[in-house]
Length: 285
Image (cartoon, rainbow, N blue to C red; front, top):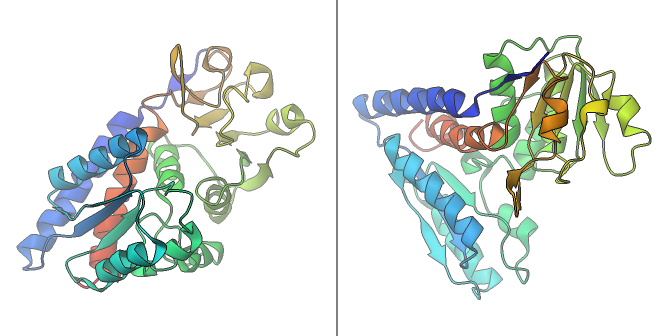
């Protein structure tokens, strides 16, 4: 058996088309186009690439690009003032603070300046709390993208045994909560988990978001399981994920490649969150 690869590029294209249609509907109704304010602090090359891709796809979907590029030595108070300005601006539907920010800045305090209604990264305490309570809010983009992939490929989640490897606030914890909301039985693993192989071998669905290259191998996977690789790492041999792909591909039933799996879904769900914020939470709703 060889795993069927889950085409994140194709599914992301579908999401972007849906977003563009939603934007056209909003504009046709007389409302302004949703506006996405990306905030980039400093000149980190990887962050610049990520933000450039987000901005490009934002404009391609018909939304307003309200980008702010700020110097790396900006003070905490000055950056908070920028976020406060964007929060008060009715043209801004969503605010994305590109992380990580320089070490002298307090990320938690900065995120707290972003209104939950404009928090298109789903990182504020309010949106995290809504997710934990199973209520409507803006969901972190990567876990939201994983859920969309699972749905597009018809993966049954109700009653399924699911394992999430990783417990970050950005991916691991919200991922587990989303799976729980779909009636999966979820085990969350991390660096202190004993006998990770034994835990994973009984799982129907494994989402690997540990940030550790190659943490999951073929012996860790039940034949026919669905394996979602959230990790992405630059190596001398190219991009790789948290999954040892060559080992897992002959065992799994469904598997995301790296690149081309979860990555494209993250930006697509950012766009979906922005138009959702415009319709349901923002000033143009």
